Structures are given as C-alpha cells and as structure tokens.
Length: 220
Length: 104
Image (tube, rainbow over all chains, first blue to last red; front, top):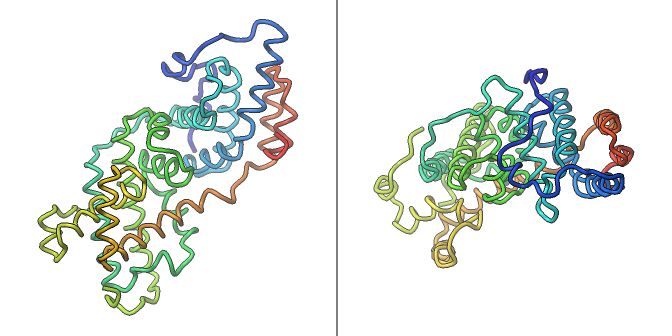
C-alpha cells in the first residue's frame, strides 16, 4: 500500500507548474464555465490513460483509484496552471507521478545509474545467451504479455516509470523527462536499464519454465 | 550483470559494425540517432543476418511492451467516485466523467 493518507491535497504541483501559471484561478461565473468546459475537453479524455499509469506505478487497484482521484482533483484545482495547446496527458502524468511519489515514504528514489550504453551492451549479451540456448525468437514465438506485465510491476522505480512512459505510453524522451523531472539523458539511462532488466527476467523465466527452444544457435 | 566493453564485444567475434549495432540499436529503434548514424546501422544490418536477427528480437520485445497499453480502462466505480469528487469541488462537468472517453 502506498499510504495515501499522507497526501496533502492542497500542495501545488511544482515550480514547473507555477511557471505555467497564466491567468490565475477563475474569477467570474463565465470564467468558471470556460474553465470547466476546457477541463472536460482537455483532461477528462485521459482518465483511462492516467488510471493505467497509476496502476502500473502502484500495482494495486485500490491505490490506483486513490492516485487517479487525487490527480484529477489537483488538476481541476490548478487548471489555471495548464497552458492551453500543450500536452494535457503529459501534464496529468506529471501530477499523477508526483501524487504517487509523495504517497510513499521515500518520495524521490535516488539510484546510482550506469551509463545507458552499458545496459544496451548487456542486453546484447542477454540476447546472445538466449540465442545460444535456442530462445532467440522467444518474443516472436510466445505471447509474453502477461509475463511482461508482471516483470514491469517488479521493476524498481525509477526504471518502471521510464519503461511505462516511453515504451507503454509512447511518450517521447523529452516528454518523459518532463514527467519525471530529470534530464533526457537520465530517461535514456533509466529506460535502457529497465529494458535490460526485463529481458533478463524473461530469459530467466523461459529457462525456469523449460520452454521448448528452437534449434539452438541455428539462426546465426 | 556487468556489461562487456567494446573490445570484449569484438573479442566475442563481433565486428566493429556489429558492436555499434549492439551499442546503439535501442537509440536507432527509438529514433534517437542522427540520420547519418541511422543510415550506417541500416546499411550494416542489410548485410548482416546476425544483426538483423538482433534487431528483430529487440523490435519484437518493444512491440510486446507497447501492446500492454491496450486493455486497461478505469473501472466505473472509479469514474463514479471521481465524478462525486469533482462535483463537490463545484465542477460543472462532473457528469462527463461517468460517460467515459467516447462521450468526452
């Protein structure tokens, strides 16, 4: 459980959000009406996406519900900080991740990261080992979706967020960097580490379950 | 797992070009390489079955991850709860939450 009771609903999102502020909160009934119409048009279509992201982060349906609820309430209260014409889904993901992180005791995990390139190279050796064992076409042969979903759930933060944002939700490195509040190079490092860990996990599962290999090493 | 340095990759029998593919394939598949760099990788993979196999392997993996995006929608109980929360905030569009994305 993520301890959502600790959430502080009145907290504003971040300095970045403050920098977005333009007109301020609505002052007249006409402003309120306009804000609500914008909110319905821009923010509400992304409820399923935000829920999916929250579920990936929390790995618990009840906690995901809490995170989504808090995300949308915060988004509504601070709608005046959203810049029209920008990517509302990304803005909601940023709030969602902040809500999630603030709900945990350790809000901002700090991980000693290797260069992403090292993980790219390590992934090559994972492939080589899989190929030698006859699992080189594992991803093409089997529906790995369920195992992959579990493996992503077991990934440590911040690797999980990087994989979900870029590979599942199809955000650019730049957008993911904004959501995670880190430089683009850090997104790359975290993404590559996450992919490499996932591939190691899947290769390990294939061996553990004794999946029938194709003719070992025959594809070279 | 520790990653092998470049000379180790080459010692494993990979050419410098193959090592570049291993090193930069994710950048290539993520469309993060310069046009020249991407073209160099493409040209090598066109003539190297091993690297094509590796590229297919990684592309299949990324495709499988991307497929996870479909199939999980917010439950109606959450939409009801969120609608109630927005209503209590004075949001006039709270009913639209229940209608789902198709009606938004």
